[in-house]
Figure 1 (tube, rainbow, N blue to C red):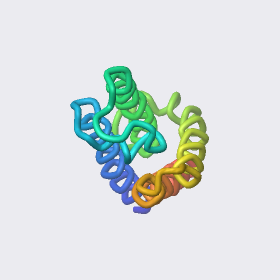
Figure 2 (figure 1 turned 135 degrees about the vertical axis):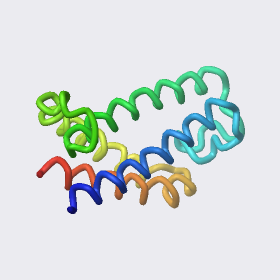
Figure 3 (figure 1 turned 120 degrees about the vertical axis):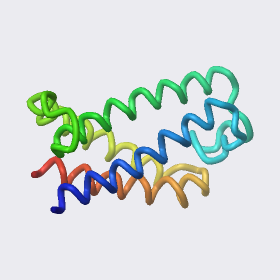
Length: 127
């Protein structure tokens, strides 16, 4: 039961992060809420491309987590069983970066989201 709940919470949160990155790529003026606030307002073209790249990476990481949880992609399970630890490490790094960022908005919004993602990923990883 806790694995299913973790997968649902994870899916919801990662979906929000992906939508946020897509909005940045589309030109929403939310640069202050990402990348340490280095690009306030609309992202420049190179950062918009980077946001799209992040969406692809996030979707791959999400696929690993959802496969490991048994929620999706059952054929990927052997790969996901090992790759989940890469996702855990990536999530630890993302959480630390969101906690220590100079952007107060990232600390307020994305640090808690990162921490919740990390907790759900660990819950799924140790199953």
